[in-house]
Length: 272
Image (cartoon, rainbow, N blue to C red; front, side, top):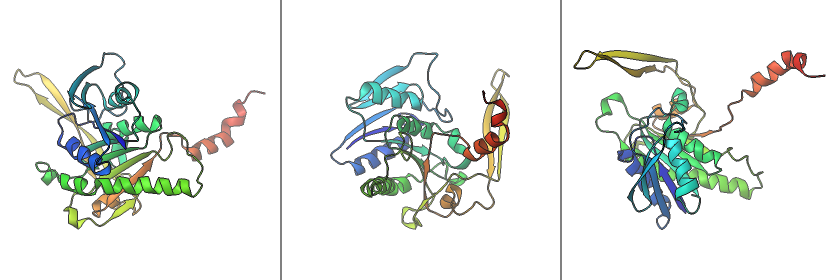
């Protein structure tokens, strides 16, 4: 098996080492490539470096640091660096959860999205942690259960094909968002296939500060709270010590709204 590992926290991130461990557990004799941003790119979503050149630095055998975004990394790896396409892509392990409203901000998920667009099964992995554990992220949960979660999905895909399931669209059933709860690895309560949830409260904060010369600068952040997430959501799973596995799709069309709008106004503006 040939695996591409990337992230949005940067080439030196601790979570990248965990992702490499997971890749080697999946493919002990396989070919592991690491192509990750040179610096942290959290919150970059699926942005591309179109207005500036992308610099590339080799950091070891089949290991590269990219002065660019997570999406840049996947494109460079698949379309330029790797002689053969990867069988799967692992993005992460992100420092912090990527669930509910986080999904569209996440550079971790964006890298997996880029892989899905290229028709490669791609996994975005994130390790949740409580604020009081910020100094000691519980990486051992992802490290212990990451390969198991990915194997479960790959085997399910193989079983579906064996049962004659039609071949999916290039970006369908190829993108999976996996979040590991903040708990002891032995206290894990299982794995749950989930849908994207939504927080009851999420407020964007702007904090103004001053540098030593008195010039203002700003930090963006979130105040987040959830009261009672539905049991089939990613939020419910991680709050209940379960690994959340959420299949995602690139097509963001709201089909229900599209059908409703077409029925109400579509025919009024159709050409004769």
